[in-house]
Image 1: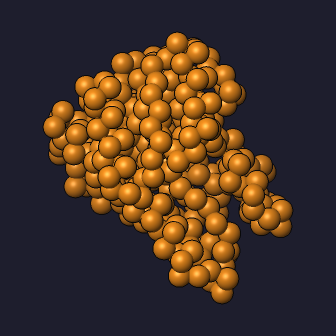
Image 2: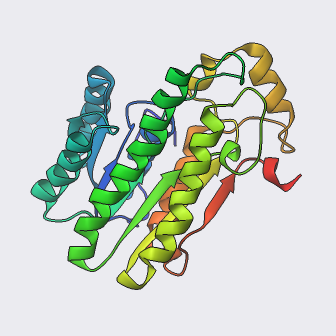
Length: 257
């Protein structure tokens, strides 16, 4: 499946109401297309209104149900409203994919306090808020699944990730703690930890950094967004019914070293 087409799936999300944040490009976009192919009814979110509309039109043209919500996940009002919009559209929220995030290339000496606060606001606070409001609705309905986007940088140390890495440790931490907190309620919380993935955000980083981190993947290449999207689909699906609080590496062997 390419990121620009929707091919028939196996119906693993048929009828399920799914919210995906940070959906206009990269892993979020690929995830929206994979879920649409599997029969999901989607609400897609991003701050990039133009990119979001392009994706919405692509999904709608394929006959899938989709609505777009432009909003900033770091703002409580926006996060609450996008969950409310999902429930208003479809009567419930079955799956939330907390994907929105930014990836600045900053080492300790070049990073400023403002850099740290900005990344934590989106990658940390934004993920917390998405989980908070989605889980509240899932608890009312008796269950659901949340998938967070962590990173290999949230599981092991990396150079030049002095602000992004700690934010992804927050993502992994949220996943493990909420996985335990919500387990008996029927709400599962898991995460994927991608390695280096060919996204627009990665292409903005220095060639030196990209080449260096790519070489550290035992599989010998960087990953594609759709490869992460398929792992997200699995964790969100009923096939993962006995999995919660897990952080699944999708990293070409990076963390196994």
